[in-house]
Length: 137
Image 1 (cartoon, rainbow, N blue to C red):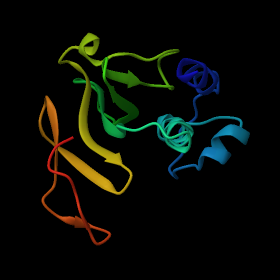
Image 2 (image 1 turned 60 degrees about the horizontal axis):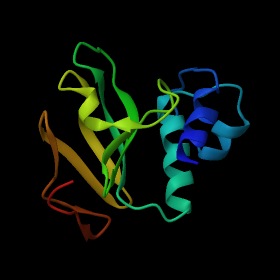
Image 3 (image 1 turned 180 degrees about the vertical axis):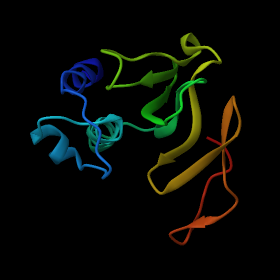
């Protein structure tokens, strides 16, 4: 089912937008960028009770000049990258290697994280919306 959702979003033509689109705008629009597709997939998963999913903003490749958005989903079977802009299905995060899918920031519900190293995300030691963020993603 997850790969079906990824495939449906991947089929939407890419088109950059300065504004973040809502999941409804992505589904009804003629095009969407990585932000919109990632938010739409996050919404689909979250609305069905899927846990341990993070919206990640980072670099697709270490040489990338612009940022990219995708999801990371941690399950009992491992962590998966879900990128409905580039890929047609989820894949295990370790397949990405160290030179691609490099996180800078991540969001999970009310939690906001920033990358402390190239290999992991740490929550900033701040309160967001009156709630303390978790210590590690």
